[in-house]
Image (tube, rainbow, N blue to C red; front, side, top):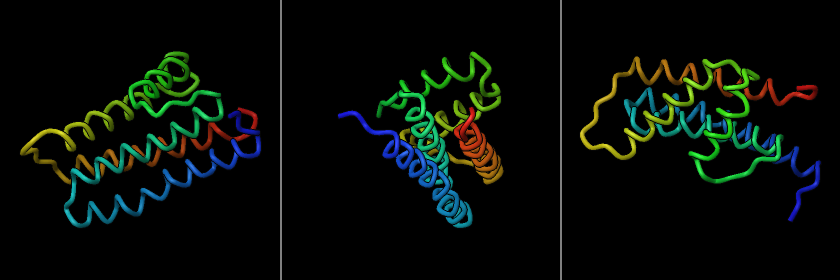
Length: 134
């Protein structure tokens, strides 16, 4: 089923809203020393914004690696979006994987808060990129 333009735009807005709603959850997790869960939400905030970007450009997948590969190929390697954001995505994915699947992992608050700040920049950059005329 093909989505009409109005529905697609609503879904893009929803995905950005989803990304931004993770901000308050992440702040609560950091305040309560729940760093692995914070890393998970940081990554998912980025993931939601990438889903929005994919929608705008006609790319849909639920597979994380495919979405990351598409983003890197279409936006980072072509320098439509600055390379810094590819590094933020990679770091978020790696930390989320470690926090979700590795055992006995300890994280420092500074590492989580740094990536959280970068994640907010990432979501903002994607939202800016999605504005009409881009």
